Length: 462
Image (cartoon, rainbow, N blue to C red; front, top):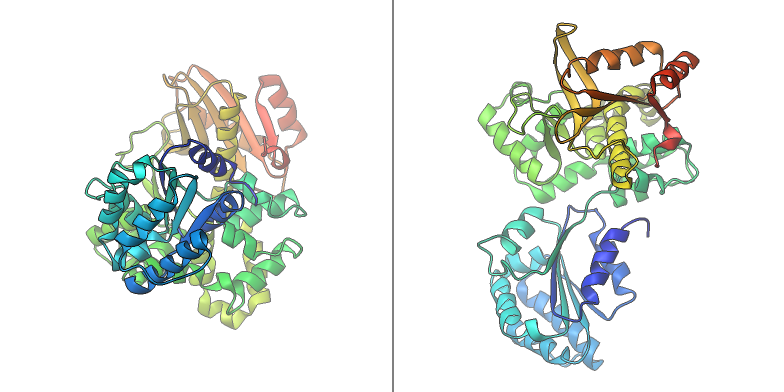
């Protein structure tokens, strides 16, 4: 299993505590929650129950068979109700450490809402004194947050730990393609993002273009309609959400722009966009150093595969069907550098975070992100790909990120130095340039003279 050491370590810490533990695990579909739990189960005594979308009686029947075969080696009969099933489990786990995993818990709770109260009663009156490790896992993030951990939930305050399983970062995603060049690894992450199921869809022995054709553009391929499938599973009125995501993927990043693009009222758009934020598909960004409520906020799709899919596949479905998958792939790859620019900025941001954690930056950033706004020096709008400021705003790292097929030239060096003049209060300014294709000799000489740092693609693992 690639990555997930932090998640495995947390599970292991809770397992070895020798007291009752209750973890709530959640994260979007395809993110790898079940894989983590299956890997953990390989080395521990585990009852692994996967709830299914069927009625409560059939789920209880499946659970009855599972626990009886686990403890007694055979199945006698169904338990009459969940109270009896959980009482049996409690009695059997008195003398040894038992892990009970309920995967896709929302399927169980939606058909039998009382299961939450039943579990709460068992925890309060029995299990808190048992050597039991309970894990409830679910893909419905809103359900796990509100109906399991929320203030109004019967289970509120009972969990001893929680885990939101996140997508892989670039560093982890690159490990899926050990034979790709640095540029190919970057583009693969830009196309697929960090969702393990999507990364596994590409064959690491096949070319990037070949994978794009066979696993995304080809009719019937798993990734050809995946975002649409996921939205249908999670949301009502997927058409409105599709329209919003398509608009954002194609450059509309303010509520007014999105509303105009999809011909919906601004208030309706805001409501739907809030739901997409809850699902971690959309995120609001403000210029680095400004409060979250800044009116300069813009929206971006957080998942790189969704951004790619809505920009290319969804927007051009009819066109690509006439063009053919080979020519469609060629057309996409011709403009991939432009598409990759914000992805590369995200990869560079991850790189800075890793360096901050390792203590290899001049200071630990208090704020880190993209900046845009008015530059009084040039009396025009300006932007900085990445800006890191310390707590007092007196020290800053100004970063230029370039994903181009030529070495970074002096003009781009000058652009960043000019943009930094919009921050006169930053007394100590450091410059960092990150380029996919390296740097001209003139830029290398100037950087050495001025103490600027130059980083190439192959160094982004630091």
